[in-house]
Image 1: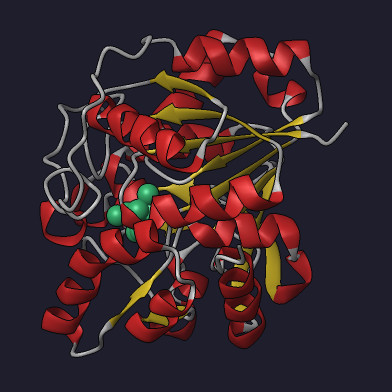
Image 2: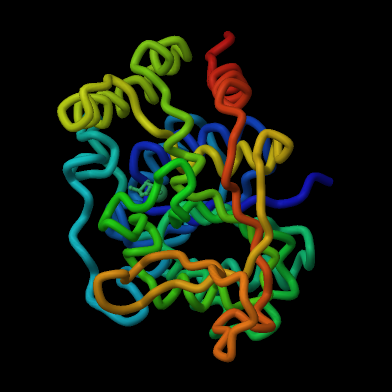
Length: 310
Ligand code: BDR
Ligand code: CA
């Protein structure tokens, strides 16, 4: 039996690419939602729309609708559209999805110890809640792969502030708790996701009309902002890591998250090469951080997998 994959997501446009890539390549058993690009309720509606379109048979469960320590931020309408999917489809599904994402995740890892991988491609609120409610969660989960953070490699520092990436910025307290936990974790940050840009023509080459339709809004946003008709498919790189870890250069370091001030949401790793009296990272668990990527190989894997064949 193949291991179980759950995607914890705030379904926006690149999240949909990750979901599609995952359902084509993994045993995707669950989609849990969290407030981020859109509300957790809207993300659940989008998960239902996606599942209906692609005949995905997975549990859909709604999760946290606000960060651990702050009110919910506004949806990211300029990148993903008001509905998170570029505003191109009517969504007839209701938002009355069971509000049990955290219980679902806890029960799943308890039922299948060391067999559940979670790809967290939105803010980390649900994962932090799992850790808080279930002390053994960290030792039961097989692996957590996070899209989030920015470490400054190749000049990639932040997309919400000078220091912070959106998913981590959206709930820095939750992210810091996850980094402090013992969950075996791989981080797929902007340092690698901004190195894998898919052009409009490449999206079209998949011949997947759903992905083509929802991408239009994001492609137009990037063209306006950056003069390039293309997009970073950030979240899909978590699935790529699971399939092809050899395509990534990694470092293993303890990670903390700034929760305050102008650096709020910044992902931090040890900087000093000297013995220091106040080592904030002493004895912390190590996380695997992707800092380099084989762009051509990743694009080839992704586009080949997404291409409609029938
Ligand atoms: C992350 O932010 C969201 O807008 C994307 O879906 C991705 O998860 C990139 O910073
Ligand atoms: Ca996302």
